[in-house]
Image (cartoon, rainbow, N blue to C red; front, side, top):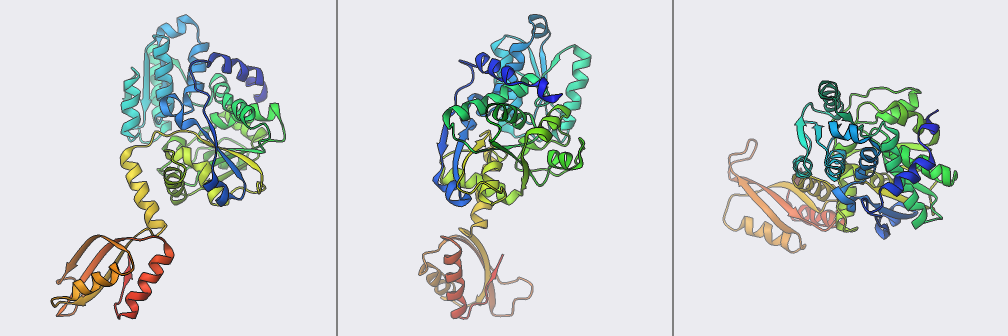
Amino acid sequence: MSEEKVTLQMIKDAQERLKGVAQKTGLSYSNSVSDLAGCEVYLKLENLQRTGSFKLRGAYNKVASLTPEEREKGVIAASAGNHAQGVALAASEYSCQSVICMPKHAPLSKITATRGYGANVVLYGDFFDEAAAKAVELTTEHGYTFVHPFNDPQVIAGQGTIALEIIEQLPEVDAIVAPIGGGGLISGLAVAAKSVNPKIKVIGVQTENMPSMKESVEKGQVITYNGKATLADGIAVKTPGDLTFDICKKYVDEIVTVDESEIASAILLLLERGKTVAEGAGAVPVAALMSGKISGIRNKKVAALVSGGNIDVNNMTRVINQGLIKSQRKIFFQTVIPDVPGELVKLLTLIAGTNANVLSITHERSQHGIDMGMTAVSLELETANEKHVEKLMTMLKDHHYFVTLK
């Protein structure tokens, strides 16, 4: 049975191996998320772990459990980035060769960091599963030991050490919310938490673009889900593991999904209000809590796992912009004004009177549909919130401007 393949004792053994390697990360109460979620939310900050992700725990535990002969041949892994860095660091600690297969579109920051830990990086395929197939091919060819990112008992045991820390830091915890990709993290958390206290709820979160474990559990068998690319690239796994599927089916109480805009909003809130950087996969538990996706947790003590912080700077810029637009702290609109001196100044003076800040402006006389003697004006504004935008739009209409929000 799956519960015999990963036990509480294995997780405790992993905790011993990880002493002096993995940091005991903080569990920080979040007023902002708690207010939105209607419960007491504590953020387990694995984004502050070495390599910027929880993945170090499972990777190191697996490499540490290998024989000297296995380590001599080298290790190989497939990863969207975080597992790659964990395996590369663990291999370097044991002075053994590491090869990492990553999807071609993995964030540049993760590729660079993985190479920085001494790994030979092979870019292959568009999704994790294709990179994993390449890793299996190279394993057969060169005799490497394959370090699976989630479907391995020692990897799962390493990830389970997080739950032991949470219970030690917050003994009265009622629920643990964690991201699910292939299922290694939540499987370790679930075995540890349920073994110590069966009353602790374990809730998984996936992206709507790739809900492979949720679909598998609902259908009662492991399925391959051909989803779409997602901000949460670290959990974009088409096919869950059979071992992790068995554990999730037995121990995970609920799996919910969040969409891309909810993930972006959570990243922005964590950055702005929580002062913490989370990648997409690391933000999905907070996204689920913010969006009211999880039932039965009102006024409960909930640990939300911020699993990683390795977000590409370019992605971060896009996420911030998307979040600002969604919250109407940045708007784009178009109007038409007479093409005579002073009319543009008049419009801008009215906008300035509402304390909106003009970020960019263009006007175009030759735009299709514009009458002779008129010009189209497009503006990008920095605003405070929806009420501010509503006030601004009302004021412009009162002054006889026809406004189209983009």
